[in-house]
Length: 176
Image 1 (cartoon, rainbow, N blue to C red):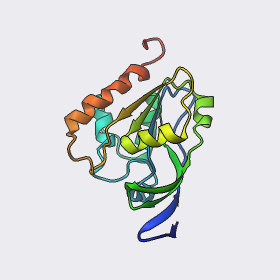
Image 2 (cartoon, one colour; image 1 turned 180 degrees about the vertical axis):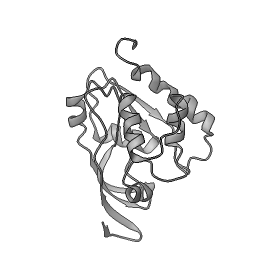
Image 3 (tube, one colour; image 1 turned 30 degrees about the vertical axis):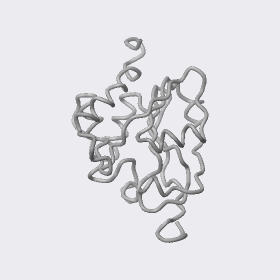
């Protein structure tokens, strides 16, 4: 991390994606926030509602530790990463992103039979469209941000939106 103009810093993504060969959906944020980088895992800000929403969508207790969150993702066939591998950013402000470098999503698409990509927030969706390639037959869905900055979306609204994940995360014998 090095200082740029103002409070903008160059950030290289500090942790690896979570996925395995059983993953069927890929959920992508924009870039790990300062709190997530500090926690060493995705959606680490205590006020971010991602993990609470996921627990409610799948009707399980909210995963709290990194180990619980990783197990939750793999058990529910969810791959998790960010659209960007690096960028210049001010704090957690997606609006401030400059010089984006896309993540290499090919390693996930090559290893798992991803059926759908879900982006968390408008900026992640826009950056995906601009810098990534959606494999043939894979659906792209933009979901609302679970960030505390998206205060207009209630937890109930978010849960309702994120239920779409259930379409592709059932075991193979129950899907479609």
